[in-house]
Length: 446
Image (cartoon, rainbow, N blue to C red):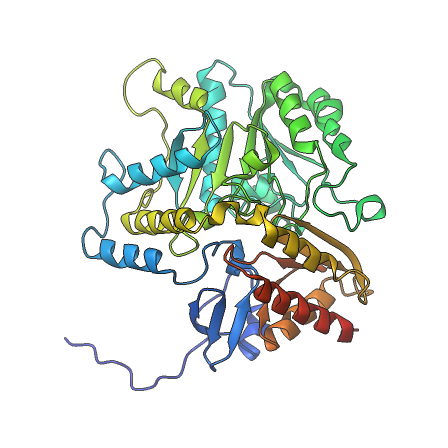
């Protein structure tokens, strides 16, 4: 039987349940894009919209870059899929080697997933399995951080600290989890350029409260984003992450950096661990590895951890974990195209140069506008915080987001903040357009 194409061309919006979206509001006035190139979307009604958030913190190389497009196109006609379960194909080995070249010293092994959420769950499982291998099976507790975001799988939500993401699933979250305080303090550290001078002592809570409360012998790992992204772009105080590393080392606790957003050039280094000069035990990544062109994530593992698995007694599978599409050929092709683009255009260090300083000035130029109570930034990520409306938290930022979209700029509302995270190819004219539009909107917003 031949299936005939439908005669009508009207787009039906009802059937797709959109993620992290007010579906009813969206479907009353949909924001639909038809194509994209470099820094801009083209909407279905023909408007150009500047992508001020690398879409979801991921399109680091810009949209539809030639090397990435051609890599995916060529691979689709050669090998569409092969499993990585006791079988293999060359591409994930090549991608892993390229990622290892960029990684901090002593982190030369990669476990591939399909997303940041899966990467977090994988890192947590590696931590548990590692301690068990070493005869410390009581280390089963994880420490996250308030306002941290570690994906939407149950383990990731458990260590996350975004209240709205947790509430509906509270009964199913991992029980052996606690959280550090977040680092934001508008009373003493508002409008800091980069890392604030004060606040590193906040991390002492780990040693002064959580270790005595739970026992170091029961804590497997601490997981933090070097810069918290989806929790509102929270930049750590100077010395905070180094102090965290020292505490974890003293107590035999693994340190996991969630670099799903920070990785691949966002702070002017391949990884935030290198920017802060702090060595974690595990790094999760996704998003920028393919510049958003295909789903791929992974975990970078410190060599000593990997070797513990490889030298475990007995033969057979070392780690009972994996995903059907781990190391998918098309995703790996996209990653190689993205990594080539980053290398050829020096994109992974660009945020450390003049454009990063220009971005910082643009963020802080919003200070003094109506309702602005904080501006914060590091590298090419930043946010402006707005005073909440009485009885309507978040409404002002959502309205600002919609007005910016109507004026041709896409930024993201997070609570009462607007987040900025442009592709690494952004030029001054793009930042002028983004911050100029945001300033215009904020001046007219009640």
